[in-house]
Length: 124
Image (tube, rainbow, N blue to C red; front, side):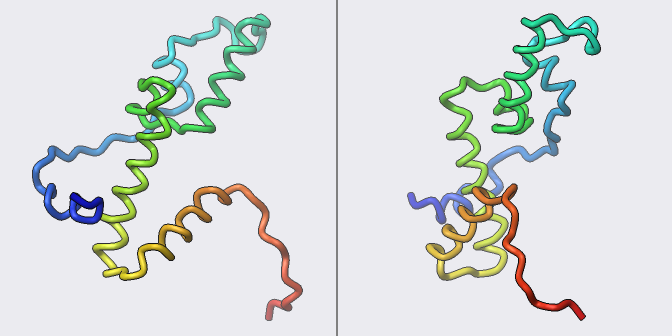
């Protein structure tokens, strides 16, 4: 079965519920990290905190991803993107050029924190 067929064929055969990403403090709790005094961290606590912050910024706070093994995190995120792409964009707007949309999505995902070059176009 092709990816684009999965969204239509399997629709209605799942249980949907709303689940929000973890806040940073919920993320720490899920990863069993609770430093005693945040103002005065030991070197070990500081290193663990930095490592967990880096992981939180890289993978986000979706509970399924936070609790997954490291090698599964990227696969789950890729699946989330595919589901959003087909269910929320392709079907709703009847997109025909999927290759162009995939390239556009990849540009959005990889360049979200980059500066846009300024153009010297006057704003009126």
